[in-house]
Length: 108
Image 1 (cartoon, helix red, strand yellow):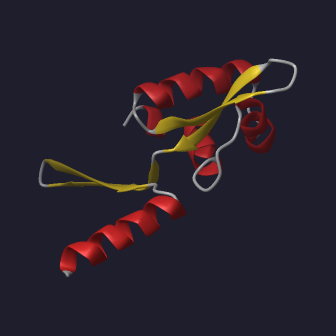
Image 2 (spheres, rainbow, N blue to C red; image 1 turned 120 degrees about the horizontal axis):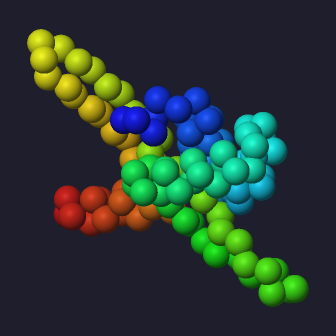
């Protein structure tokens, strides 16, 4: 919950819901300083809200990671002393299609 209270972290998560991006791309899009961006990426990874979707190696041998959000939406509700958190996972089109066919096959 603490990481979600941070405006930079929320902007970064929103930036990578639909497309995986590198930290420099996220920094430019969200207008976030470099040290803050790398720190938030680590916090989001540690919290399980962000994942490395793939590792890219350029022709020059430079390696970098592309990050994507693990969550599409998070809802928090506090009522009568109870905290309720609703998390919608961020699954890609290929995963949605695989799930569709898996459940269709299971219904036969």
